[in-house]
Length: 227
Image (cartoon, rainbow, N blue to C red; front, side, top):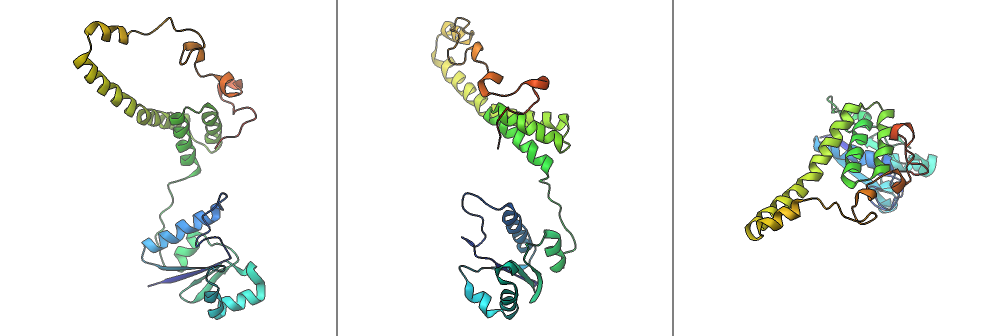
């Protein structure tokens, strides 16, 4: 069995994926190590602040620290041989060193990430979020058709619980309420005062969220950042 040993610099936890600001490089590397483990590679990871003894006991690691200081970390050994020092290697490098010939490319591309964000914007009714991620999606080459599919999927998921509770209420009320009362409840209230909750005059618009509606409403929110 291939053995991969990773000697990390001092971190707050075993993977560094903690706290308010997480280094995306550490997230990626942790996922790569998990991927190695799922393919039968033995993985061990040591943190300088929590396991200094492991660094002192390994002659190659100790020599690297004496020569370059903590800048030599992270250090990766594969089957006892130092393969990289000072950087977190890519999944391609790790798989090659471990003798894994077949790589599974990630499906989570930049385009997919923007489609997910667009769906989340629909689910949360966030106009600035939608505008921002629409622009980002266009920049990475996502088609309008794919964005429309993401919107339709998100809306369908969003509508499902609302439809379910409406159907449940209908079943209960049909069993107990007079027919006239049900008919009255089904008619839209056209007398609602302007400015009241959910009145037509309060329909979501650019003024409500401060968005710039230039260029056909496709611009990002003015002075806003999103997600």
